[in-house]
Image 1: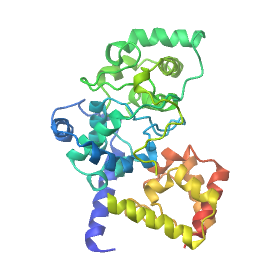
Image 2: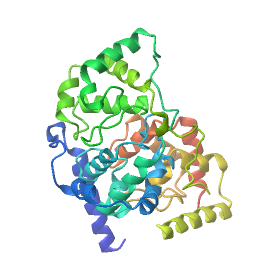
Image 3: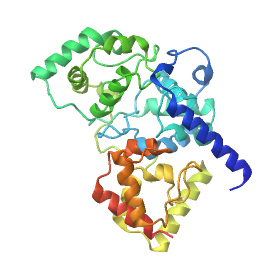
Length: 243
Length: 104
């Protein structure tokens, strides 16, 4: 290995280590101004380049951006653009632990702040998977009803009435997201493991039991998504990547 | 990006020509997202600190996959791989290991 490459890999290894040893005590100031997030938000997105950049993302999130029902990879298609910019910028700045995604978020893999602006514009416009992973309790069950009450009492102020979220405020759209992915993130946010979570949410859910968590997320997964945001069927393929 | 696409296509073609491709393992290597990090040809990892897998010993590959999934191995960057191992069962690991070991 040549010395330059060795140095580069050493630096990456160090940054990976520092990203993974950060503890719950290092919770970052939520959405602090500045950094690449602010830079990307101001740039005019180039959708054509966004499509090129997305090829890297598609290896895991799939060419449709629909992720996996197993919850390993989230659905990112149709997510609010500001949310996508914040999360990408946070992951590559080491503010959100995500060792699987970290190398793909780096400038060497996808490019600079302009690339963030471009790829997020592309992803936000992708139609969502109409067949996302749902929780086990359909409407009419007592578990669904309990989840509804929990959601109305705790979540609607930010995530809105049916989990629509809020682009302007960087609150994610959670309707249409895979059940198992949300369970993991909720747990990590509650237990301080995600690190870039909104402190108001951490406070709001700190007394949620695992049982409450399952019920409230179950309810979200049974909410309807605006049909205009959905792909026509679960068999839809992204024409930009169909050969 | 275009160059990269070409390189990936060429690598895939090279694999097809070498005749070492066994359908099950090759498909799993893609669908379980192994290739995202270890490279489409299993010898061009995304970071130099990730291993090349092509031609590695089958039994060794299988053991690492099992140990990373179970958490028995948790050093280095195994945390990055543990996240995806939930999608891979033991029979699938065996297919992938066999296929990787057969690559030149």
